[in-house]
Length: 355
Image (cartoon, rainbow, N blue to C red; front, side, top):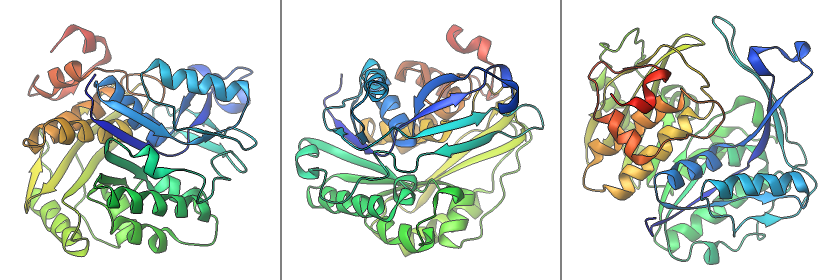
């Protein structure tokens, strides 16, 4: 395992999903798994051979113990996780099928993470030996206190010289404590080195107008000139930021997605191929797989940002082919796809057999 230590911070929840694409009213069984944006990133990084540490707060009960065991099974460091609070957050998910969209119900009020407050976490100790800190807008959306904890962590990370990355991760249904995300997120983003987000998220949080990604097959070419102009606008507003990433997705149906991405760094825009995924198994966590792949590429191949973007987009494509929140692929498998067929078309049956 690589000794480079990357710390992520956020809430992990228990996911309950009806089997076989059933709706909630049709099932008397739920599949149980764990997930959360920043935990998903930590799992990806551990799968790629990096030393990842996940920071959160979990209650003292056997369900939370099982959650810890699940993270440890993937090699994620859990020594910095606080114990306390009443409960583990839950979310229920009806899976999308054909023209039917997915449906998510959150049950996270008064969770151990929801009741986290500034001063509880010894960030200086947790960041000892670390090179990178990653957080997302979901953590700032949960409560005013968790937003303050994000600010606290970012300040210490900056003081200690860590690279700080932010995934905008806008979730409309989470912002319920009286402040708008446009008030809260930009001041936190001002202290960050790397931004990740979708075109919709940049538009919503920063009030920008962006080109539309309207791919229908892998031959589509994104409006790179438009994304370069938009990225330069973000860079001018946030001069500390040295990497601006756009995740691009076109949804033709619940089971047919096309994805790509751009990375603006050093005053120029990098782009990558379009992947045509015509049998999506589970799209939850695909953005986190994208972020995890890019962080790995940037951290391990700092001189080759094109590799980082290609790797992150390939990781995102592969995540669409497995159930659950976590990506399940090694760095070698992701790199194999990133170097593979120029068609950009993938199907689950081929994943382990090469390209």
